[in-house]
Image 1: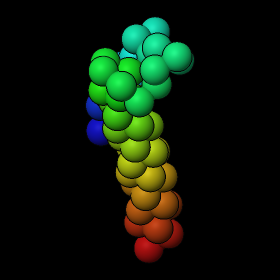
Image 2 (image 1 turned 180 degrees about the vertical axis):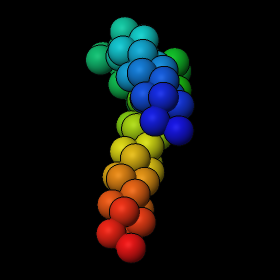
Image 3 (image 1 turned 30 degrees about the horizontal axis):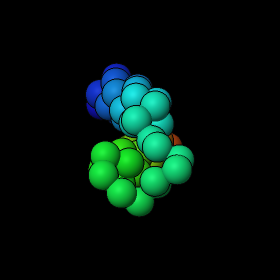
Length: 67
């Protein structure tokens, strides 16, 4: 599970970098720029959720180790 979350986090970070190059700052909310913004936001959400998953697994492992 650890390697899966790291891999998906790296893919999401790559998508953020790629879509940041697609942004047109003169027309940020028109055309392809809005699609790039949505994809950047979705990638950030995915990274956040994966980090929450990793943290919850770490807490679960520590609680299981105590019993």
